Length: 234
Picture 1 (cartoon, rainbow, N blue to C red):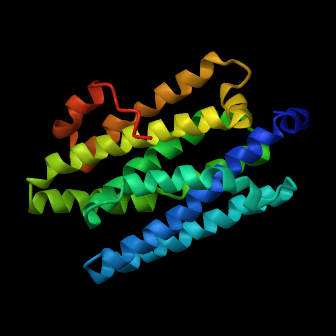
Picture 2 (picture 1 turned 180 degrees about the horizontal axis):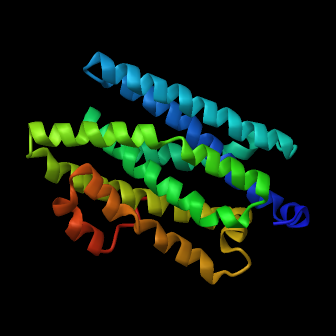
């Protein structure tokens, strides 16, 4: 993508970075809260370290906004209500639901940003990939913790599978509403072809089955992934 293309679509890029910035900021808060809920000290330490890393990613995104001469607060503001509403509607009942929420919502978010990475200028594209790349340790921790919880009490598997399905539906519904409300972002996501917008959202469920299998929830969630996911509540 040339600098001319970046200039023409810079409002959409700023929207995207504003959304990513606020998402990483709320991720920092969420991981900090999860650390306080963890019963075991090693889990508290692991989650606290993840929160620190998430805050570092937040600062990276702010740096790119500064390079674009964008006001970071103004860039994040349009997404505050939407993301806060998502987290309010999907407040976990316990620590293990919090881990599943983090894993599923982070996976959907990563898939979302990867689907549009090729539409970004090289510097922003590199930043997005860098922010997404440093989540493997977090995923490994969540998978191990959830599998251990299921092994200790197999009855939680069904509840967690339904919870994961709800998270996917809420996340997709919220993302669609945000795109509908933010015309610059919608133009960027469409990449010059309005028909691509729906296709990009449809692809976001592709990785769900794999994530559920990694958590040990494949049998409980197989019926859910074949059904139409809910759009989420308004």
